[in-house]
Image 1: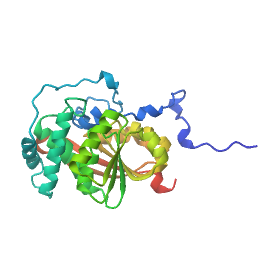
Image 2 (image 1 turned 180 degrees about the vertical axis):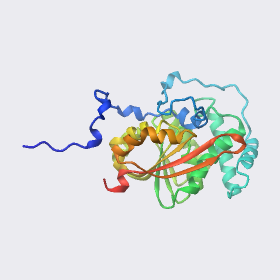
Image 3 (image 1 turned 90 degrees about the vertical axis):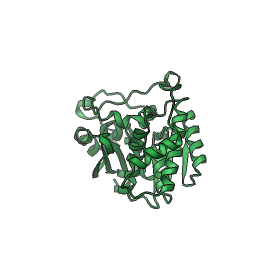
Image 4 (image 1 turned 135 degrees about the vertical axis):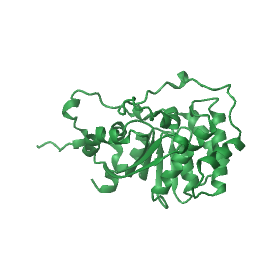
Amino acid sequence: MPESPRDPAEEPLPDEEGEPELLPEELELDEDEVAGAADEEDDDEKDPDAEAEKPDEEEEKIEFAGAKIASEKDLRKALDWAFEGEDIEEEMLAAFAKHARMVLEGAKRMNLTKIIDPKEVAAKHYLDCWRSTRLLPLMGKSLIDIGSGAGFPGIPIALSEPHTRVVLIESKTKKADFIQECLDALKLKNASVVNDRAEDHLARNRYDVAVMRAISSVRENVRLLRKVRHSIKDLVMLKGPSWSREVRAGEREAERLGFRLDTVWEHELPDGLGARAVLVYAAPGGQGL
């Protein structure tokens, strides 16, 4: 009896013979990287294919537990500065400031972000996330924020797109609980948090859009999703200035797994705080592969 054909995505590449299988826990993403690593991508000396190290929960260090953090009023001023010239409602900026204050307070107890300067918080977290909603047609769609951590980019997206169903997935219970506190405080009805592994959740659920922000390289991101790639229609990655190098390095793997680069949108953060890019990959779940 002839053998059933294998999925080519499960076949190792010629230079990957003997490479160990990725375990589900490799989707246990480092939310400190999710919330804060966007600015670290500005370092051109970093290897764009290097996967972020994931510290054990008990080994995480709180870097500014005793530091004075910005008030909500100061954060709002910084947001006004970052969003100058943008078409955004005052109520949205007030909600961003409220969430930002919660993030900085929460970061005294757990690693949520390394960024505490108000202007950097406003530009690197909120402006970066919000601008992605200006590009992506999200109305009426379902979106999963993989490795949400402090709620980036899921909470800014949910606030900006009230007709989008947003699920923020977080495998660490403390951080999932923190996200739920934020959703309750902001009265966000279109967003929910799931305390689960991304791979396990996507094996049971389908979404129109999956978003990954400053988690790992393009190549590693598509590899992490290879077994659940049919569960999403589009994969969006929010990246730093090395995005083109990452795309080239991950081109072969993305093609092998059925991810096709569809759109790239570049933008600059104010005051020289860095270049950013939104990469949109058409995923197998939206192509009928």
